Length: 80
Image (cartoon, rainbow, N blue to C red; front, side, top):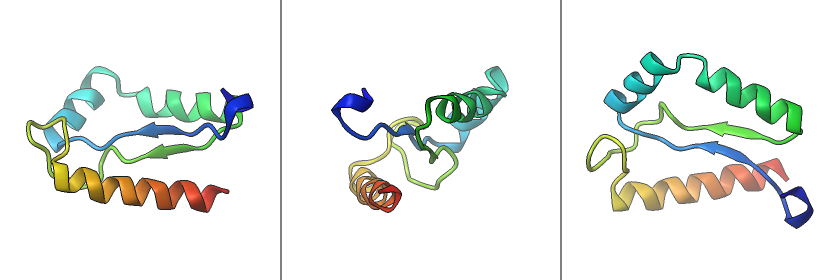
């Protein structure tokens, strides 16, 4: 993908219950993604524990999605 542009691994925010479930079943997932990003030489942005409201514990609300999109765009712009 690098030949087509900048590659960034992004872990999206979820509700606290979903985050706890993910941590229970795959406690090393974040370390694995960090390691993968380092080995590929790409940034890894983790927003899992960020407090964005969700509709169902997994999908952030429309308003929160707009806020998150602005934050993600700003964070990616800072990487450049």
